[in-house]
Length: 264
Image 1 (cartoon, rainbow, N blue to C red):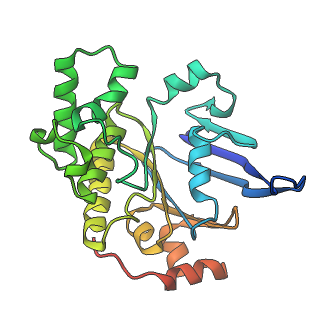
Image 2: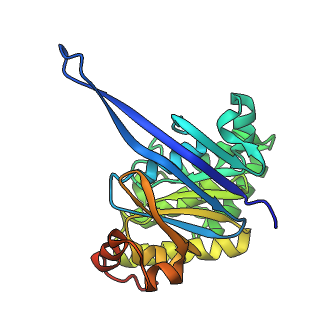
């Protein structure tokens, strides 16, 4: 049996909240509390739960955008949580993120060409012409024309901005992408288009997704397997058909009933 692409073992992230200016009281919040799962190459695991349950923190800890308190993350046989800065930087070529907010995740001072090319400047020794060609290819892959290269984020709709963000995530040809609520800030029709685009790109580029969402219907459409998160813990995990047809946990049942169907 082949080694999973990603293996998360007993991941914990605690945040310390201090009291007022004159208070010595310290409260420790367990945002992620002993999360474990595996992800095979080419599949999509939907990590679903309500806002504040710890799912986005889990995704950021996996990529070490936030440092976990304890636990291990293994990617392609390497212990991500033990890597030094140089090794982690090299690994970031294969591990990328699509952020939730297409309005806040793009630098308003940079045009589309610079936004998409930034990872190439950092990680690749490419000429300006080569970067421009690559940026144009990525724009076509996400359904935009190369004519938008000189434009700035404020000139685009939310869905178009998210497409630019997806193109940026694809710039280094990653193997694994954390899609952190990528459609929650979009209206339903645009969200359906982005979900379809993610499915198409997965087939085209052989991507593996951790798809984070609060919407079970969206996850049901895209995910191979589903992990349900509640109060920092995964309470149920299994094949999408199994989880949606015969949920074992009461919280999973409430998620299935809480949101409207997405027609993608």
